[in-house]
Length: 284
Image 1 (spheres, helix red, strand yellow):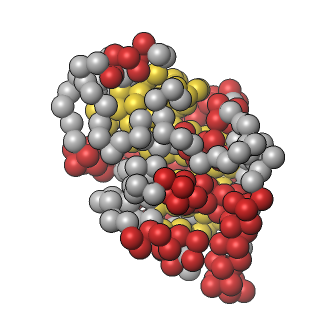
Image 2 (cartoon, rainbow, N blue to C red):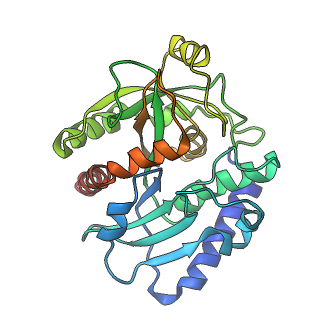
Image 3 (cartoon, rainbow, N blue to C red):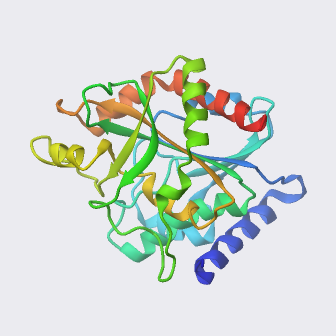
């Protein structure tokens, strides 16, 4: 059972957006949360007249005004026609679980960004991010389709009392195979594996943490996707596609700036992959 207060907050946010958009507003069947490096091509592929709205302009996200802007994360909602496909709702940048110390307020916003998309009519939700490899066969520039999560080291997820769901229930074999097929067509090397979420914003330790995460079954370390999948699990009618772009190996020293640079260098391939995936979803 979903928390009524949180669901009401999402409905109220959607009403605000629809009122602002006016009579030209149309619901979106496909939603995308764009992680680092995933968004540039999609912005260029948007048809003229798309709707662009900063999240901090929505009353329910007012706490964002107190949070510093993270480089590479625009915190914007975009709704429009993408490359002559169906109407798409995109979050250009996400709110992470590590962005402020007020845990409950942050959890509300992390959750709201997902429920907002679903309440806008999204039936197919694509979750993307940048992640670090934990296995030698998964290299920089590859992508990984999620087939599970290692949750033991994750922060508290944005679920409320009585919401007993498993984020892994959102990861279906049908959708994983769809990701693999589209990655092949787009010229991207794609693996299948589990993501282990750490809260951040610090990176996991190379000497011990990465080994422990790997021994627990994880293929990559990350700071997102798991919370979004947990919220999506409350809506079993929503199809989820979860995938990560690999920005660093398990052994090298790296930084947020270097990860952003590598993701930007691959943004063309990542964007084209998403356009292919959206096309495939539309044909279902």
